Length: 510
RNA sequence: GGCGUGUUCGUCUAGCGGCCCAGGACGCCGCCCUCUCAAGGCGGAGAUCACGGGUUCGAAUCCCGUACACGCUACCA
Image 1 (cartoon, rainbow, N blue to C red):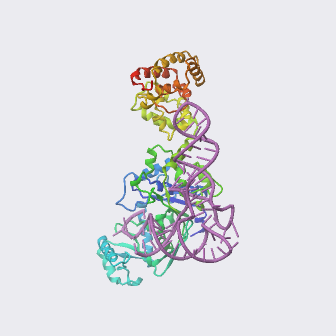
Image 2 (cartoon, rainbow, N blue to C red):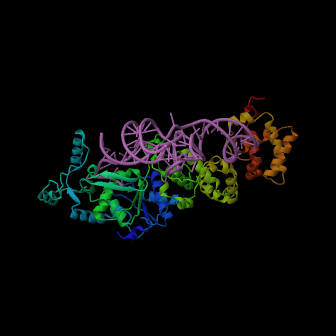
Image 3 (cartoon, chains in turn purple, cyan):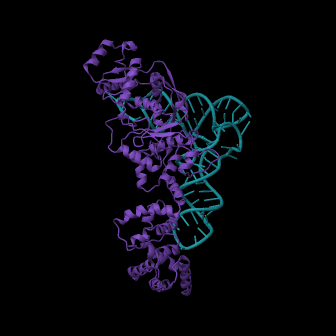
């Protein structure tokens, strides 16, 4: 009520702990976080676990882990604490009870005693009659304009029969919802149902809990998915019942499958964890998801953003209205862009844990200390930066920096090997062995001179050497690759390849 | 069915009455560079602004209708 509550921006992400974190949820959390940061406010996490039947063990921890991974760290949450807690709805039951009683006392809500089965039957009947399914107000007391005598209600209450509390939607009202993204939206109260506020198990429904908590936690801006727009008028009615100031509402568009249906599991990955597993970085995922529905606005053509830049530039004015298709190809491009902005040391730090994991199950002839050193990883990081899609590619596509090649791309062997290749390679090995300094420049010079002396083009050596030392035909500059690998490994691998690629396996092409 | 929201290149979008017979990015195609693959540079194809009516000297931009899509319609969130 006090103007003070709205002088500070306070936003929240309020998921149900029902499993993984949906990428759409990540975006909602991000927008809330960014809005708070932009306005020097607070962002908080509240767990909405009012449906006891859908709880998933460990989900809350998972949500917090994912948010923190992404750099969306709440100022207040079940884990981080805060002065408006508890931040788990199941720990706030007395609060909902208290406010529900207030509504009951004010004549804004009433008890109802139907069983779920009875309600189901009622709805079926209404549908059959072509009516919209809506509570028939059977238990609306006479004192509130209904037809149920107070005596019967008292009786039912005394009997201990299971009961719920429903809100009484005022009749003949046009309810205005102000949404910063969509403008004013109007609803006729006649189209609204007398929503259950308190369930038979004593837990509140979303509608009661969200209004009570957003008010108590001084939430200034409710930024949530578009699927909530239709129930916002109920929330508006509740705010008015209580006489509370309403927050600013912003309903963000949905994320879609390629066929424009709501993003779902059936058509691809929807969990943030899935993308983490695929190797996408938090920088790229945050950047990408921010751009699904938001843009920096006219005049700016920026596509790559750091979290700090998003915090500075984010604005609800530039959040679009239409749903956005989750397009993996753009994510891939954004991932590359972020990778290219990392320096060698940063890349090394990211490659190392993945390599260590790999080393638990794979043998290497290299010294572990050498291949996990910052210098080695940093050099590889910078060399392969332009051709890697995600960090873990360094250990897969760039695996030859850590493990001996076991196979040689068949197609390429056919294409690049001739009868003279093996003897040539062996002869060239001697040149390499004699090099006082094993660097890209000296290797290149030696190779050029050798090729020239044989009347060959450099390519006649380059490709076989690449195959022999890496096993594959694609990669960065060969000379730099050899330099990093080091003289010992290079000679060892060429000699091994010569043994393993027998002349008989050489292509027909003369 | 009812209520609500939305609709600009395949995709993400700029655009808030004249600068737009619509700009950028991803993807796609071609050329250049080149030891391969990328990256990079250059160029190209790709949107009658869902459709139909208005309003206006003038509309992608404002209004109305239609179509389609999506959301909601639970003692789920």
